[in-house]
Length: 115
Image (cartoon, rainbow, N blue to C red; front, side, top):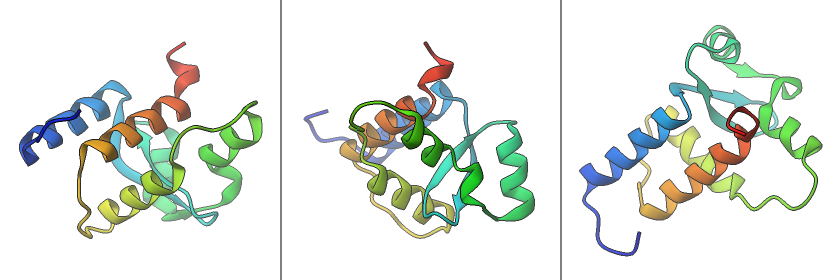
């Protein structure tokens, strides 16, 4: 993505990425500091709606970090902050780089489902 993109085009690319990974609109926020979109219709989505802030024991990012061998090449902080801001209806600037970061983050987080 090395040309100028309109906001509509960026939102379309973000929507396609959400559909690809079956991401819903619910953002799971954990007390460990990680925030990410849950799968549509998942148990974690139900827990997030019922409880609000979830415990670190149920954090998929923490689990993935503990069980993954090798370096993590995704930008966790950027994606988690963007999802948290988006969830709290704060403005965040959608950019091609953010979409790339989110795509690699969700690919890393849910890769066991697509291998």
